[in-house]
Image (cartoon, rainbow, N blue to C red; front, top):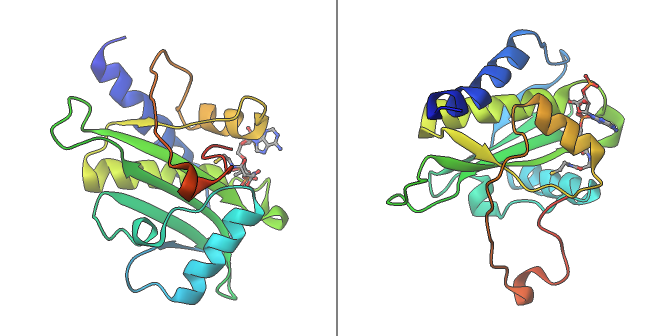
Length: 180
Ligand SMILES: CC(C)(COP(=O)(O)OP(=O)(O)OC[C@H]1O[C@@H](n2cnc3c(N)ncnc32)[C@H](O)[C@@H]1OP(=O)(O)O)[C@@H](O)C(=O)NCCC(=O)NCCS
């Protein structure tokens, strides 16, 4: 597969998803930033934890370093119902500088099955592509998370021969898993 084909693989499914999807009317998509209220940020973190997903740190959530995005679908009462995040995952001088980690997808149980995670995930891919020049998206999955595997496949994030190795500080993460 040529590199052009690899690059197109992520953007095309994402754009296709968005073309054919309307978010339920009462929901609004918010890009988390430094102006986002503490209440909404805390609600997002609590919602992610309730879904078994480790929330991104506050500064990353708010895009302070300028190399990531965190989206929330918010209901009419201002509560977080779903989220998706992505961040540039390599050093700017790395040959893989346009690779981004993508995921941290979570949808509150009462909103599942409406295509919201698929839409937010697609929005985050398009956002990273357009605003930060991300051209390749990778994620980590737990082998038995069928919902997530299916969702990733529909987003164009599919199994490959790439391997990435992460170092995790047990004093910070304890026994928590960084994938779901
Ligand atoms: C995974 C999760 C984010 C999906 O949220 P959602 O908003 O219900 O997902 P969508 O409605 O957008 O579903 C998109 C696709 O994912 C797949 N999918 C979603 N839930 C599924 C399930 N329970 N079983 C199998 N496939 C599923 C389907 O292919 C679905 O497409 P379809 O509706 O056309 O069949 C949600 O179930 C969740 O928060 N789970 C716990 C946290 C988690 O596992 N996060 C992912 C890893 S970070």
